[in-house]
Amino acid sequence: MSRVFLHVGAPKTGTTFLQEVLWSNRSALARQGALYWGNDPGAHFYAAQDLRGRYFRGHRHPQVPGAWDRLAGAVREWSGPTALVSHEILAGCDADEAQRAVESLRPHEVHVVYTARDLARQIPAMWQESVKNGRVVSYSRYLQTLRSDDPALVGRIFWRTQDAVDVLDRWAAAVPAERIHLLTVPPGGAAPGLLWERFCSLTGLDPSGLDLTATGNGNVSLGLAEGELLRRVNRRLQGELSWPEHEELLKNFLTRSVLTNPASARAGIPASERDWVLERSRAQVGELRARGYDVVGSLDELVPDLGREPDVDPDPSADEVLDAAVDALAVLLTEHVGTRRSRTTARLRRWGSALRARLPGRPRTWPRGSVGRRR
Image (tube, one colour):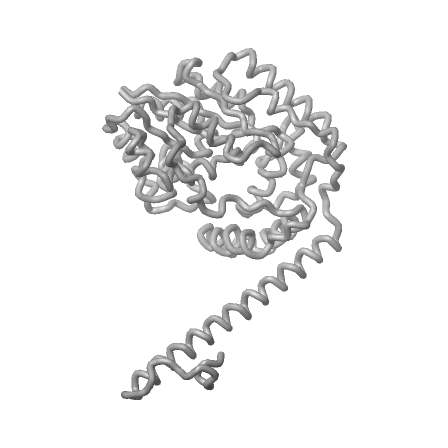
């Protein structure tokens, strides 16, 4: 019987990094007796969607139907000591979905792992993610709805996955409390790789021989003005793009290659919002202590230190958004010119190769300094 570690999120707590490391090292993990299933980096995402019967922004990927049963079947057949399943949308499972997931993985011993990060970092990160995914709520409105007793949809989405007490209560209906583990994300400035070390210490993985650099681009952090610019673009394009088109053009290309000004001011917690953020954080930590779950790291890391944080205006000025738009346009034009130059150079090289092939007995390379050497 294997131990199955079901990593259920939360979103924006290093989940992408952990999943990329697991995926890129799956052969090395298998040699340790640990299974990270799938023939596609998105396999666990498709499986989680299938389990929950929910499709991202209404788009159902063709690999989704039956994906959870395929994953669960592979895990049940695994004879090694460890199997790992990871996707952050599992944090949104209701009690019935959690029970169904656990039942499908038996007779193996199922452990639930929840990674948590302090609210001062989670709130702006989740707003950014909502904008990347096409939502049109401003940061100031986002903050207002999070503190509301009756939050709007974006607030309900946030707390559904970010309220650690609520998430783990839902999973605790399916898994004994001693098999629920809360892994805290190290604070800013901590040693690189500490999150991975904590994950390995919990799951029993041997980190030696595993490559932490073989990962993709991860999630790109936007400045506040860039996030506001993207939000306005979303509003302008509402209904005009399918989810695959939005993902390719806006979420991947625009945010990763264009809106990348490292000098832009980041979204933080305004001074006017800090009291409720701290109060909610402390209350959550108190309830988690009372439940007695296994903690890897420290619950104290979930209480943010906001005393030294500069105040921020959640609504960037028109000039700041305009500057972000001008910078984005300049990057797009530079990218366009660079692409045209690359295409022209490639075309000239093809012509040169064809011309040399038609001149038998001529040198296969142009003499140094000749016209043929020039771009």
